[in-house]
Amino acid sequence: MGDLSFSTGLAVEASGKILVASGGSVLAPRNLLFRIHPKTGKRTVLSDFDNPAQGTLGQSLRGVAVEESGKIIVGVGKIGHADATLLFRVNPKTGQRALLSDSDNPAQGSPFSALVYIAVVPKDCDANSHEDSDAQSHD
Image 1 (cartoon, rainbow, N blue to C red):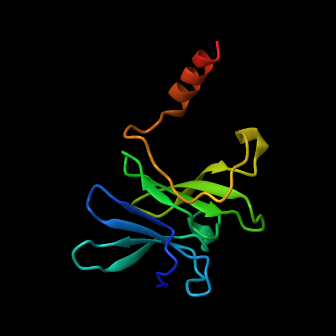
Image 2: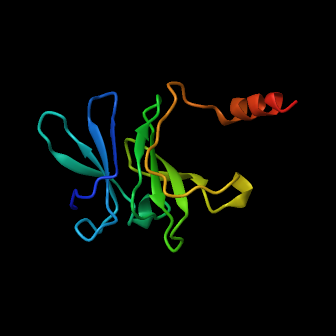
């Protein structure tokens, strides 16, 4: 399975199950997103960030949050780029990852690094409506 050590993120799903991000240390070298049953304490790996079959790879998980839709946002370090951070949206059923933002990509805006905490607004942001409101605020 994997070691749960050096936890860098914790969130609770609507079901009450607990999500824990772990990895990036000597004690927990694998980069895993765990789901923990709140009554039994049983841990299962939801997404293995060392497994390319689940999406783009990442290291040293750095925060986790749950969107209203149930999708999970996880921050991770970009492999080969010490200061770069990636944000992923993780499917809560399959563990598949989709890249949401790459702090090393100037086309996506100013870089950010050392992300530790993630929070999600109560209502999921629709990218198109967000861009529309940004455009209106600059007029």
